[in-house]
Amino acid sequence: MNPGRIILAAIVGGLTMFIWGAAVHMGLPHEWQGIRNLPGEDVLVPAMRTTITERGFYMFPPMEMKNRTKETDAIWEEKIKSGPSGVLIITPGPGQGMSPRQLVIEYITNALGALVLAIILIWIRATKPQAACCGLLLGIFAWISIDASYWNWYGFPTTMLQASLLEQAGGWMLAGFVMSLILGRHRASPTMS
Image (tube, rainbow, N blue to C red):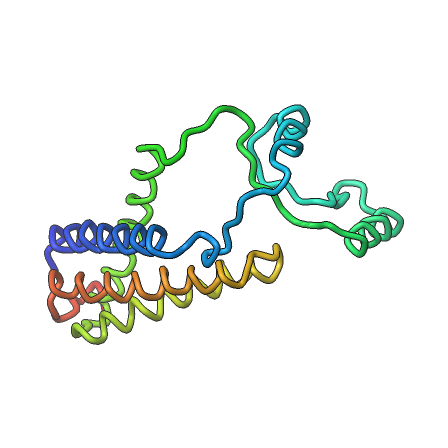
């Protein structure tokens, strides 16, 4: 198989996934994606500015991990029971809405995912329907292994989980089909068998 075709398939597959993801994010209402505005922002944000100085993933109530004892676990359990609990992903300094850097990184990650899919499609010598099904199954696999875990452990909203399934499964199915048009169906080379 010509390596140029594999790279082209990854570029086009990544672009397909990028466009699909943009359409899903822009086409679905934010509420349906599980995204809500922070109530009490005028009170909470100034407090965050003075207490959170590093970008990160913050869990509350905090769990003692270094000096963990039965007592610290019991305190944490009580805090969980009384609520609230959750996670915050914070960038404390000045930010930018949707930066060109973020868009480029998103496309690169989509193209790298498409490269993995292209290699699999070549190995299995997929027809167009098989390529679409393979993309669909890989999208569902990624969704189960990542997003469903976040829903389970961190309480991500169910609507966010549903929107993510649409994005991952639908996007990779479409990318698989488009990539199959570039890759065609080839015999596996002896090194790929």
